[in-house]
Structure formats: C-alpha cells, structure tokens
Amino acid sequence: MAPLYLSFIRRLLVLLLCAGAGLCNATAAEAEQVLVVGVTAFRDKAATTHDWQPTMDFLSASLPGLRFEVRPLNLPEFEDALQARSLDFLITNPQHYITVESKYSVSRVATLVKAENGKPVNVFGGVVFTRAERDDIRSLADLRGKRIAATDKTSFAAYLIQSDLMLEQGLDPVRDCKLKFMGFPQDLSVQAVLDGQADAGFVRSGLLEAMAREGKLDLSRLRVINPRHQNDFPFLVSSELFPEWPLAAAPQVSIDITNRVVAALLLMPPNAPAAQRGRYYRWSTPVEYQSVQSLMQRRHIYPFDKPQGFRLQELLHAYAGAILSGASVLLCVMAVLYWRAFTLNRQLVASKRALSALAHHDALTGLPNRVLMEDRLAQALARAGRGEHSVALCMLDLDAFKPINDRYGHATGDRVLQELALRIQKAVREVDTVARFGGDEFMLLINGFGDDATLDEVMRRVIGTVSQPLDCCPRCQVSASIGVSVLGSDAHDAATLMRHADEAMYQVKSAGGNGFRRFVVQAAAAPV
Image (cartoon, rainbow, N blue to C red; front, side):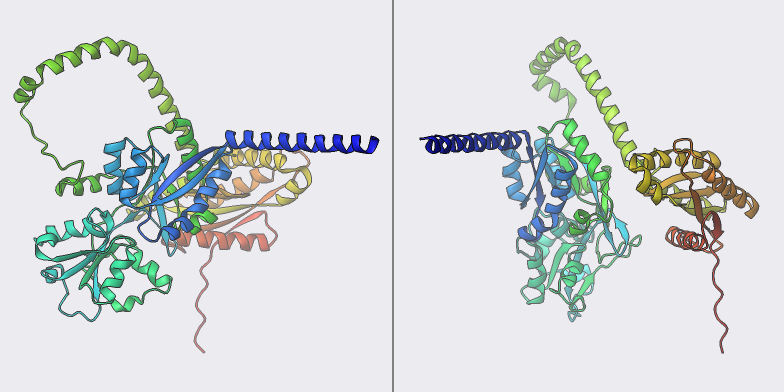
C-alpha cells in the first residue's frame, strides 16, 4: 500500500506542477501585446517578410512586453486590413500613406533612410526603361502608340510618377499609349519588356539594381529613358525625387507605444542586422510629403479628386440650420474640452522634446551623437566653402580604458566616460563640438581656429584634462590618443576628414598613445 500511495502522491505533484507551468505560460502570453505591422509588398510577399521580419524582431527585443509581426500586403489588402482595424502600424509608399491618412486617420511617425554604396538615401523616383537595342525609343515622346508595362494604376512609384512625367511632356499614357498592368511584383513589368510583351516599362528606382544584384537581370540589356543625375542619387531614375516610405501609426495605438517604437528605431545603428536585411541605413524623424501631395493634387488623386472651390453664400444658405446647431453644441462642450486639449498638447510637446533628445544625443554622456555631429560637420563645411573659417575634425580614443571595465566593472566605466565627456567639453571652446562616436571614442569638431598654434593649444588642453586623476575612480588612470585632419590641408570632404583623423589617431596609439598627431599626406615616390 505504501508504494501505491507514494506513486499516487508523485503523480499528483507532477499534475500540479504541469498545471502551474501552463498557468504561468498563459499569463505570460496574455501579458505580451502583439502589434501587427503592414508592409506594402511591391515585390514578392515572401521576400517582403524575409526583409522586414528582422526589424520586427529588433523591436520585440528592444521593447519588453511587446511582440511585433510583419504582414506583407498589396494595396487592396491594405484597405481591408485598415477597415478591420487589424493593423497597428504600416510601412508603405508615400502616395498610399497620404490616401490612408485621409481615410483612416493614420499618422506618420518616422521616415526610412536607405543606403547604397555607403550613401544615405531618403528619397526615390520612378524609372522609364526599354530594351537597349530599341533605337526607335530614345525619349518620352517616342512612347506614343507603344505598349507600356506597369504594375497597377494606383502604384505611385511604378505608374503615377511616370504618368505625371509624361503628362508634363504633353503625352497621356492612357490615351496615347497601350498600357499593360502586370500586377505585383514589379519584376513582372521588367520581364514583360525583356520578353517583348511590352515596348517599355515603369518601375521604382532601385528595383533594376536589386534584380541585377540577385542575378535576375543583366543591366546592359536595358536603357533608361529620360535619365536624370541628381544630388549623388545612386540609382537609375527618370523622374524627380520624392521622400522615402514612412512608418505610420494607426489611431488606436497609444502615444506611449508609438513613442517607444520611434525611439527604438531612431537608436538602431546603421550596421544592425535588421537594417542590413531590410537594405536600409537607418530611420529618421518624419519628413514632409508636400511634393507627393502636389503630384496627387495635379492629377486629382484621392483625396484630391473633388472640386475644391465653393461659394460661401451658397454654403451658408444650404446648411444654415446645421451650422447654427453645430455652433451651439460646440459652444457647450468647448469649456469641457479645453482643459483636456491643453493637457494632451503639453504631453505631446514633452514627448516630441524627449524624442528629439533621443535622436540627437548620446544616452550615457548627454553629448551630441553621430547623427547630430554629421549635421554640424555638414554646416561647418558649407561655411568653410564660403571662406568664412577653418575646420578640423579630430578622432579621440581613450588609452587604457578597457582594463577599467575589466577590473572595476561597466558601471564604473560608464562613470569614467561621463566624467571625461564633461572634461573634454570644458577643454574645447564654445564654438567647437564634442560628440560621442561610440564605446570609448569621441569626435571633436574644431571651428575657426585660425592658425596651427591655436589648434595645437586646444589639443594640448584636451590631452592634459583627460590624463588628470579621476574623481569617480581615483585608482584609474587613462590618457587620450587624438588624430587630427584639417579641411583644405589633407581633406576636402567629410568622409576624407573622418578617415584621415582615424588613421592619424591609430598612428598615435601605435606610438604609445597620450598625444595627438595631424594627418600628413605622403609624398609620391620619385620615378626610377
């Protein structure tokens, strides 16, 4: 009897443990909020999921308690999902965003920034192309009477941009050409031109290069019609450029969750796996889409498809009763709503300030981050280009910082970085900028120093203040290695300034550190 009794007890305990575990798992699952992000699939849906799921995983890992799922959709499917309120966020083309903003009250919160060959790109355009051997198609005017492959009549990047371009040239693609709408993905339009089903095609900028990278296309087989070369834009393009895709929040998403999502995306580093998989560079604060709206207004695209003018007298006569009733109700509720609106506005201002600080300053030291430094460097170079002042860029790396983390822990290391950041900022002049580049590296932008003696004096002050005993860790001892690059002396653009300063800094570190060195251009070897 005893063994049977013990066996029964053991089985009962196992059942209780299993039930407890199931209850815990169910509680955890209930606590986790799932947020669905719809993404326009202008190519294959499986490829869209492959590209965007890492971004969802990044957000899930960055925001405890929230799990993000990607849902690739074509444009008609987007309408159904927004009507059903089954999407929390959406990533789509700008024309589609303006349409759904009007219909479903979504609001943009960030803008995508892409990169190609190391260049950030937050704009795109439309491409008109034909086969390379078609000598009879050299300009937009030559498309009259030709067969044109496009994705869909509602596609902004693969039809509406090109259509607007042709209409500006006096050519109506609907009346004067033979349109063939191939549907998604846009690759189908390219294949239709290659196979001879169409004489020319419309696609989004960057798609031809993407197909070539994937081995699906030999670019030499195609020729771009009306090619444009704009502001170092790295893709083939036929049209003007428009702002990149926005991230928008649905109206049911709380401002707290929206702010957390935006803050996480703005802090995502450019080399993050999610950015690399999605083939973008980073996210920025939302830009204006006035150029997109202007195109939609020119072509009377929803919500700009209705006559805008009206006579005030006719309006008052037709709706006098409704206007008076509405005014009465409005006056009654204004007092109640005023305080609520004032409170919400104050919260929104505080949230925007917090987002701006997160986007442009280092969270640990409070110094400007790399994004803000790049902006200030661009402004300094512009002023220098007008002959207003001199510019030097310095890369500073702390010597013997790693042993502090290893011996005293990262909390002490963080306090050391905070103290040194404050010291370095005090050592430079008010017109200069100190930014945290990452880890134990800092970047110094020295503006208008006049002569080499002034620049050297600033460097000596920085070296001296870093090597002083630390208040937060008296037993710690660090020094600094600084590389200096001067505009006009060894570099003429931002990228070269950064590279030369970095090389000079590593020369100092190789020589033992605790010093500074200007980059010196090596003289070419004399011919033998």
